[in-house]
Image (cartoon, rainbow, N blue to C red):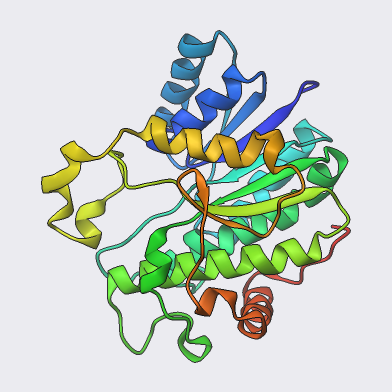
Length: 279
């Protein structure tokens, strides 16, 4: 790949596919990362039909740290310079599940995976600076409450609360990451793209939500918000920020606790390995 390259995780449908299509329209060579190979190939065909540009699909189960490292290495082998990384992949489970690596699955996919992928691709992002990392978070972080003594939710488990907590962890790591990237011209921001009609399993969060889906905008609206945070020249130099839709917003009080952010960072390093600015 010799052009401007962007990576979108969870880009095979819904808001991820719309984001990947938008980046392709903007002239980027897009790499879509997802778990399902058939959906991945369909997504690449859809992007080509919409934009006239080819996209690349790489299969990976990002809930596994070994898979995050493997796909990051595959991306690095394809390019030296990366301009945009959209960490969109995420999920909510209906019960507590632990990955084969021993990490609660919502924590693994919603928080640890984007943290690790950003770390692994940082040299390429620095080479492409000014570049952008976008963490696709959720307003649900206001429901979460981070307890570092029970990071894996072993004492009690409520799927909606755990979802909010893992998105809170993602947001807190965004703030801590922004501090570590000062001076690199790599900006990292987090946003809630909106309540949308997508393939996300809202029934797992609240069984009433599907009854109101018809009033929600489609995924293209959310993708427009992601693309603005990723690409808008008005936001160049803006880093470590939280957005709700198309506006900068105030996150939860706990999200702003810098001491807790750093303690979470240390706990994440114990799970995924140390963050080294030069890696």
